[in-house]
Length: 101
Image (cartoon, rainbow, N blue to C red; front, side, top):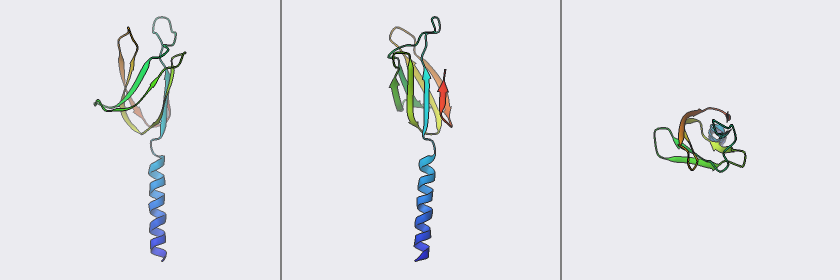
């Protein structure tokens, strides 16, 4: 009876360990480079690096702030767009919570 109990313990431990990996928050502020003011309602999209597969996205608040929650560890393309402006993309490597600009 001890062997199945040990096996169950290690399987649960393994599951909890992987559940803790890569559950990070990426946040930041989208600002106009000339005026320094935040862009309300900017669109922020996080995609798998080198792919068009979207992982998550957000819309900036009235001050240009955004938060992307539950981002797994990995390499991503972060795209920011706003009507009337050129879109921009930045490569991110997420290993912990990140605060961008």
